[in-house]
Length: 363
Image (cartoon, rainbow, N blue to C red; front, side, top):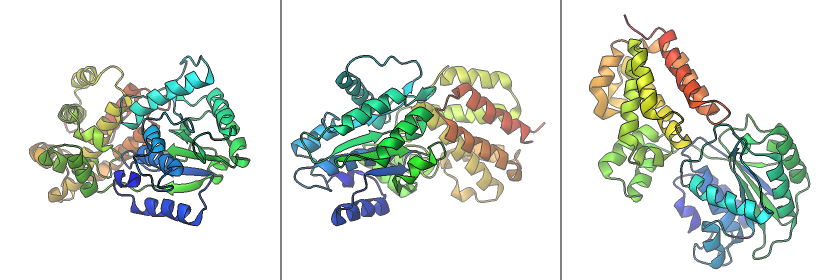
């Protein structure tokens, strides 16, 4: 069934089941959680379950409604996601939503959609408001999924607030966001929260194996992805080894103060890497930094990068783990600010410079 496709998240699934069992599905749900927790897929599965004809509230995955929901061609399911600033928004309402559906399919699959310099414009919120006011045609509810809801401009957020304050009876709004900090508090207060927890290493491993990743690779990748805000797809793909090599060059250049090496690896990473690649790179930086903490505390048996132990031992001999906390905070800020009008180059420069300023560089 639909929710069986979602890895882990037993508590969130139980909450959804309770809503349907009691007939108290909220008119607005805010799905939150770090990257890799499954927010995007859960939102789509919930939208599908709401309108399933055979198993309402569960989703049969085979009826006409479920099939259309999977391909985002269901006339009663509408999606919004950030667009790069300056993107042309022309055409009829139907044409604009069709274009958004195509982009959303790639986005949900973890494709190259980038949030850098992106926003959810007010006119798309108004467009959504119009669509959601119409009675549903093929199912009991109209469902709106707003991905990266924290990218809404203030005018758009205020517009959405008006809809949430007086929602149509047949409408359900699903807001998806990594953080609530950039959402209007009044918008958050109108939603039922559905937080997702980080996946465990075992859950990530099982997901990767089910997707066809070799077990040895899955064992290693799961340890890196779990708890580091990395989507499993970003560590199980073909780019994984290349990204790890780039991250190691990044740390090497910072720990030795070699700026030439830093600029060289930026060229190899790409002048403007897409969101997926940046997430993977910064997430792996977090994993390596955590390993350095563990090495400094003599807990080498707990590191995630088990096959990079010689490199970790070399670094740990030059690092005071007590001085890594500022770097960790910089990485956390970088993860949180991705896509919010901050260039990848600036994010990486901040991390690299923090490594040096924290007194990690030896000699």
